Length: 421
Ligand code: CTP
Image 1 (tube, protein in one colour):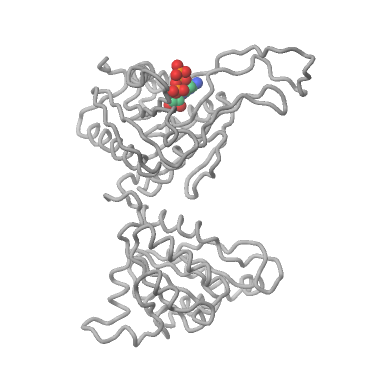
Image 2 (cartoon, helix red, strand yellow):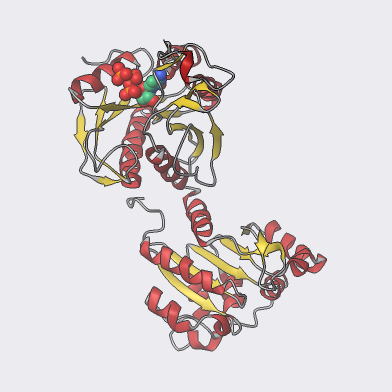
C-alpha cells in the first residue's frame, strides 16, 4: 500500500436504488472519486427517477450501468467481469425491495446480478420508512445478508421522506465513506497490531467554569488514528479537548486531565504494541480545584503543581511488562528545535520523536497541515515538507512499520537500550 488514502486506485461499485436518499449517493460518488477511487455506478430503474444517470456519469467519468444488457458486447460476461475487478460493492441507499431481491438471490437486473457475482466485501446503507424497516420481512432479509458477511451501516433515526420521524434515514455520506475505508483497510500492513494514540489537549480545572488548557485541536492524533485504522490496526484513541470528532471504527476513550491520560494510558499498556503520544498534556495544574466559582475578591494568584509526565511513567512501566514495543512522542518546540527534541527522546526513552515548530502558522496547532521532522534513536533526522496531516500520519506510520520490521528480524532498539546523544 503506497498511497496515503486507502481509496486511491480502488475499484468501487456503487449501487444506487430508488429512494429519496439517492441524491446523497451523488456525494458518496464525488468523495470517492476525489479520493482517487475508480467508481462505477449501477442504478436501478427507480433510482433514475430520483437522480439522473448523467449526474453520476459526469462525476465518475463512467457511464452508469442501468441495464444488464448494456454490459454485453465484449468477450466477457458483462456483470461477471465488473464484479471480478471490484474491491468493494456499496449499495446506498438500499430500499426494502432491493434488499429482498438480494436476500432471495433474484438476479433480475444489473445491480443484483452483479451483487451475486462479487468476490469482494459488500457494504449496504438501507433507507426506508420506519414501518418498512421494522417489518419482519425486511428484518429477516437483512439478517440473511448479515450472516453472509455483508456490513450494514444505518439506518439512522430522524425525519423521513413522509414527514414522520423514526428510524429509516440513510447514514450520512461521510460516514459511509469512512466505513468503506475501514473495510478496505482490514487486512492492511498493520493488521494484528494494537496502537494506542493520545490526542488533543488536556484541561486542568480551576473551578467549575474555568480551566487551564492549550491550543491543541487533536487533528494530528485523529489523522494518525484514521490512517492506522485504514492500515488494519486496532486503534485506541485516548483524547482530551479536541475540535474534531474521533473517527469511527476505533475505540475512543475521553481523558480530559493529565491524570486521566496517565490512568487510561497505563491501563492500556499491556495490550499496546505501539504507543503514540500526540496529546498536548499540561505540565502544571492548579494546586486546588475550587468547588464553586472563584470570585474576583478571592485573590489574584493560582498556585500550581506539576502534573504527571505520562511518557516518563510509560518508560518506567514498559521495562517491567515488555510492552509497548515502540513508543513515539511529539515535541512541540519554539526554539533550539533539534536539541530539545533529541533531549526529550532520550529522557522519555522513546524510539521516535516527531518534532514540530509550533511558531509556524501553516503547521502544528489547529491547522490541517503540518511540517515535521522525524527523529529516531540512531540519530537519523528526516525532514518532511509541509503536508496534509493525514499524509504526515502516513509517513510516521511508515517509519514505525520500519522499526517494527527491524525488531522482528532481531534488531531491537528495545527497552532500556542506549540512545545516541
Ligand atoms: N507529555 C507527557 N506528559 C506530560 C507532558 C508531555 O507524556 N505531562 C508527552 C507529550 O504527549 C509529547 C511529549 O511528552 O509526546 C513531549 O511533550 P512536550 O509538551 O513537547 O514536552 P514536555 O515533556 O512537556 O517538556 P517541556 O515542557 O520542557 O517542553
